[in-house]
Amino acid sequence: MRKKEIMLAMIVLSMGACKPKTAVEEKIRLITLDPGHFHAALVQKSMYENVDSTVYVYAPKGPELEQHLQKIESYNQSTENKTSWKEEVYEGPDFLEKMLSDKKGNVVVIAGNNLHKTEYIKKSIDAGFNVLADKPMAINENGFETLEKTFKAAKDKGVLLYDIMTERYEITNALQAQLSQDLGILGRLSEGSLEKPSIEMESVHYFSKVVSGKPLIRPYWFMDVAQQGEGIADVAVHLVDLAQWGYFPNQVLDYRKDIELLQAKRWPTSMTLPQFTKITNLTAFPESLNPYLKNNVLEVFANGEIDYKLKGIHVKIKALWDYEATKGGDTHFAIIRGSKSNIVIRQGTEQNFEPTLYVEPLNAADRASVKAALDNKIAEVQKEYPEIQLKETKLGWEVYIPKAYREGHEAHFAQVTKKYLSYLEKKNMPEWEVPNMIAKYYTTTQALKMATQNK
Image (cartoon, rainbow, N blue to C red; front, side):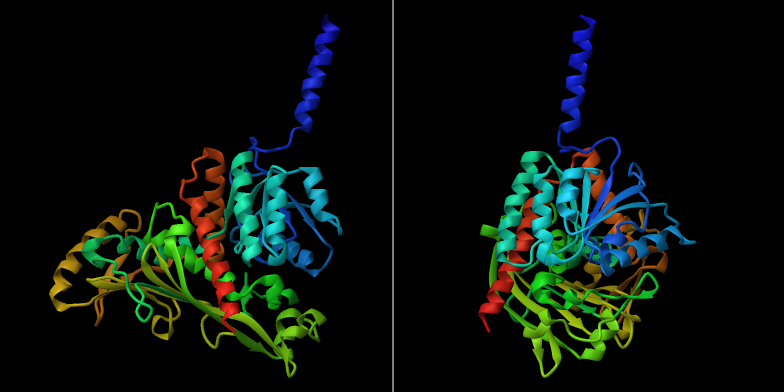
């Protein structure tokens, strides 16, 4: 009898060992898959409670993997926020198949070549992994169709698929969204028009930049829109997300009913060979970039503009890439036009390239009531951020945000990751997140389709 019990126990243990890891286990173990973008490393710029310090990296051999590991090591050696990650690396052409079969972790972090990203996401979900993916999760219509099916597969398997939306954690964006929900401050959000949309956002990025204190070396394919994606399907994702998250909070969006694309366009940023060499360390343009060369100048279709209606409200999104900033760095502009006030973020020379939030009443008759509503709202905000104040300007008020509350783009990756890990642990992701992610990628990929048809 005892012998039969032992044999039964061994069978049960064997079945458990073969079972795919479709749920979060007691300890979260990260896998980094093909880290071709520095965002993969930024996820590990902090340590996290209940996350194993060993990270399993699967990637092809090459400079992108080396640069990723160097960044992780720099965080481990940091004197300010020292980490203690241990990278267990598998490198080889079969890295994806090896990761899927090894099942050493339960959360896959994906930030790299966008041509393969949707495929990586799908195969990871199909194998029962949770996925935290950098944007964009899809860069074209075919990718969107695959992504939509993958979200359904994730639900069926009980795993969590989520994208890294760092801009939600930038304090001026968060406060602009909060103020815009107060009818006493903004007034009514009207439908707007193509010429004067109610929600308008513009983001300017730069190919040449400094990250974690060092000049950023980009892979050559970052300038290949077939692999990286065009700006209208890449950076624009953040802006579309802010429009949905900030101004229609906690609302489930159905892209079939709530989104109406009106027009879209795209145009290139020109890059000379010396400029290309500076950011890639390559002394010649690779053959794959030949379709984008004109007189030995690379044309990267990194710029795009989308005009659409979101639940009947006119929205304009503009994503721009220049080569290098003359001053400052990436910039963000956003205006919410209401019947009483405009709520605006500016980040130019006058703001010393810091994103700065303003409330600007439209009529003198509304000024006193807007100020009273704004005072009440700021009093609420001060419960969390006591040093935030109002400063009077010619057009209204600046919401003064001390530097202590400005954590910076790199720190936002830890905030997104903590939110994701919380959703994993508590299984409490809001019901609107998944349909709104689907709506977001529908907007960007359909806008790209429209823009390329309007040559």
